[in-house]
Image (cartoon, rainbow, N blue to C red; front, side, top):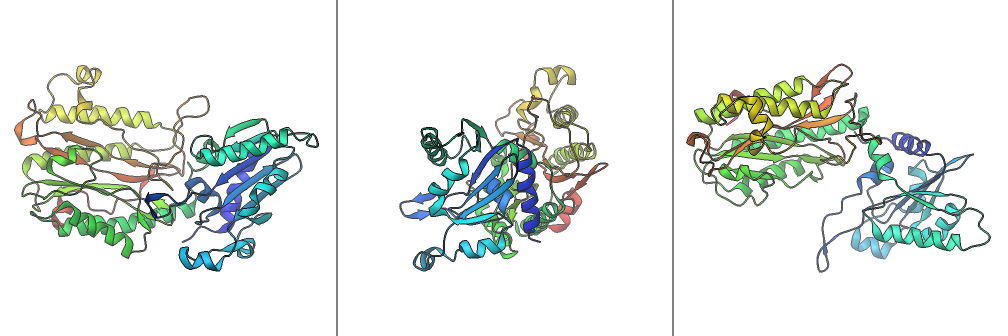
Length: 434
């Protein structure tokens, strides 16, 4: 299921062809300190991984385009038995030359000297301008030395943000990327459905979280794609609730927002289900209203439409649903104009998904014009309603209920494919699992 080197090579060539001339520099991620001498688990920089498939730290990809050629150079850590004893085996320069279809592979310790030669005769440097200040400063200092060198005819003058070009490419997923996302979703299905089966009153939220994350690991997923949300009762009305420390009570709904990361690709699924195995009548009414809206939104997806169209459609249908349930009172047009519905649905209809759970891909083109959906895009659709227990103007039977339903959708040639449709979602499916 791993993406082949030929695909990474094609991505690098495509990226190089998107510029006239210049050098592109994309470094790997660095280890991040958790406290004192302990570190967070290493997670590769998404753009670096997209172009290389390489998971080691302390590496740099350099791409160069001139009038005559396209060149790719990779800097990696050399083999070091003493350090590998502590931090694990490295690929090394020799093995990297065999693995990667690049023009040259060097020891990363040679970067400072080699990059001077590679930057010569290039006016433009494409680099991350915002997220890695130390690397940017290092390259800028190198450019200054070239600028003052009389033997250098042309030195870099323009620094451009490389991320926007890479992230635009990441919008359209290849067949191999889609297969990888599907595997992440397959594992996530097991985790969510296990949670539905195991949940019961007087259980702590973190016990459910533990089951979910154990399922991820035991099925080959490197980690969760984001911090798992396990929110019982009124806590579901905190959108990013991650304490997961409270006791689950009889009659509560449990909102679980959890997805795994498999081979660096994310899934992002939310299901809401009863702690006591059966939905109450008010819970069922609100749940089915949101589920109906979600299905309508998903069914509207096809190439050529805009995300803003789905957002408006979602808000209008949720608003009408709230009116029908007497949670909102008044005419829909007036309520929509005053954004009354946003009190209960404050977030977006969905987002891009891929290597990052919130894929850092553009929603608009370079002119600010909203992008149209195209075949190969992957996004979430996640309508929800959140009614705090202190909402005195809402019928008492709905207070303290928070519901979100989220699926992962692929835009196809003529419509869509719900990649997560097999995860239990209807009231009947959920109650049968419980």
